[in-house]
Length: 148
Image (cartoon, rainbow, N blue to C red; front, side, top):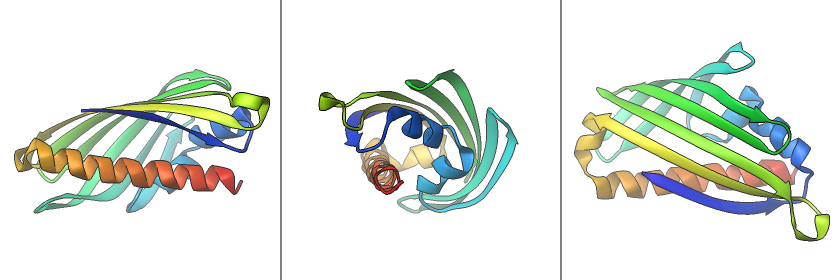
């Protein structure tokens, strides 16, 4: 599954970049995160409640900052296990000056692979749930960056 989009925020790209690469800040935008542990400056883990249709429960997720180009680009990879399922996610954030030089245009993309019990609920339900999660995450990111 692939999702992408863009949005503008009224802060410099350096602040957006710093937010995206701070494990405590970036995980604050994910719904239902229960626990975050920083392993080192490129790796962290989290526990989150997830649910698609009748499949609901906790998932353990390992996140890695795979690529950094300050202050314009970041790539993250995540692997989650739980609920007799696994999820692999890769997302990117590209930051550039917004038109008129005020604020930042953030272009994002996410690719996800889901297998196991969660995949058995069907692609329509997965896609609907993924779109809901993406909308929540991007909305929360915009809100936190705009109020920073």
